[in-house]
Length: 246
Image 1 (cartoon, helix red, strand yellow):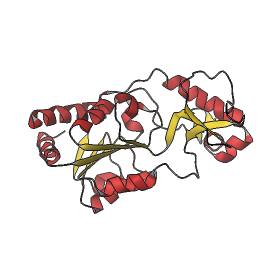
Image 2 (tube, one colour):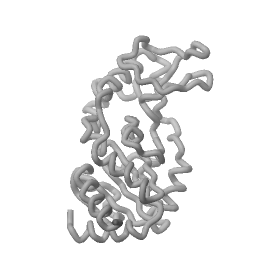
Image 3 (cartoon, one colour):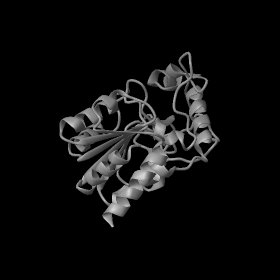
């Protein structure tokens, strides 16, 4: 982190109203949640096409639920880190929005109220037939696959699988277009439509700030790049911001 950049960003934020952040797996990595798939098309030991598609679910719902049950068990004790907390605390000062690709609910747990979960939420179930949906924190599940208490049909994780439309994408686009500052934090910026949001924000006049440990496609258009862990960078930036706003 360059001290000059931090100072300029603080001044920029002081004169901003709407601030948004696109977050990816990197922000939750410091909470102990894995960031990537393994080799050979496997996702934590499971074939991706079998556990992250409607076709895979229809073919073997028990396999899909076993996979998500294991993920939920592994996530159960994971807590929001300082990066999640800073984004939540920024709601005190700005019209602050978090647009996340993560399904772990850590932003909400940290206290953020304006959250768009593009890829859904692993803790929420929805019925494959009726309109029933629920937040469910039972880990491990007693019944695999779980059934809808309303109609008896199969429940599925309320997450976005390959080939499905991401959640609230139009609202995410609107936020990007109307932001003064747009953070890009812990994402490889390679999965669309999320990856297009920083570019849309830039086109509509926002200052783009990338926080990541390595370069991404966003690095080319970012107005400021802060290399480092999201927890450390955001904590340092927020301390300076609070001093400036006092």
